Image (spheres, rainbow, N blue to C red):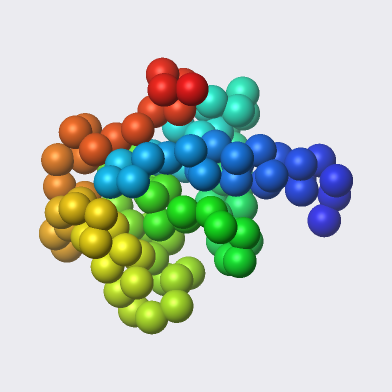
Length: 109
């Protein structure tokens, strides 16, 4: 992988580590905060590569609150279980009251 890709991934991880317990953000919100608004997919790739890095990847979802990354977690429902353990309600793979639990790094950081 190119050095700039690794650097971007590390920046993504630093943002993701700041998402508070019981809150979520989106791939696009992280990308926008990092000045790469069209790189939401790269943020997703970073989340996929975050295993073992102490990154709360389960708190990063798509812009509609869907658990689109759940198939990258061990176990069929681990992402949902982790979010529910933090008090986030999920129905049909979608976060309920998404606006209320959404954390925007552009505002919060």
